[in-house]
Image (cartoon, rainbow, N blue to C red; front, top):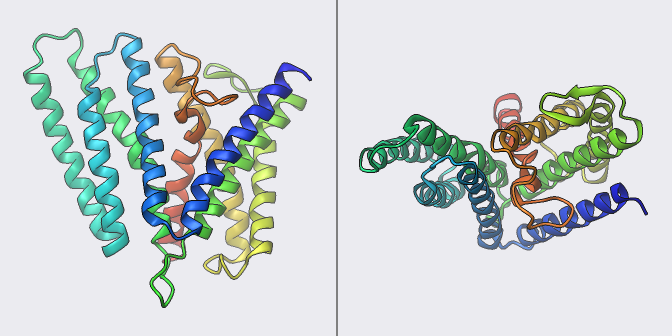
Length: 291
């Protein structure tokens, strides 16, 4: 077995195992358990991001960012569950404004720094890039109307999101490894190819159509044309999300966000594509489908 094959199987097993655990908690009705897993994942990814920057000599406000991320995730989850998206939006805006004020106040009492604007900007960017974008997964769960008993019904759309996104990742890796000849963005990631992008589009579209055929009543907010559009949109957004993390890692002069997960790297490497696909699915359901 080649090193590429070993890496692929390690990557696949780590991804399937972790997301199976997360999805199992929400399908079992343990909303709090699912949120705790999701919040832990987002907080770990944010910590990896700040640690990468600190390792490159950028003095970000790690503790302040982590505290604000916890408040953003916890408060947003509770408000989305009890009052819907509008109250959740208001809360997030309040947290972000207060976060900016706190960051400037921290810098005032920090003393002289080599590049204070860079430190503040990177700290704020981390909060927006990881916990805020990742929180759209919990928003999707409570976006669709609950059952008469009050149970959430959005877990099937989260399953759709994860499956389509991860099939895109797998398709990009397999097609890129087997047929990759033409670089897609060599200045960002030399290994990414147009053949890999085409494979991502194909596998994400197959996953979207297969899931819709398997459980149309559970994905009743979609029509077949929505499924096709989302399969292609989410597949491409997953590629962009992977490249976005490559930009972050290149800027921090590191290869992986950490070495926590075999074959993947760190938590941020696990969720990078979902950071873009989750908001895209949420706003498609809100603005296009009118949910």
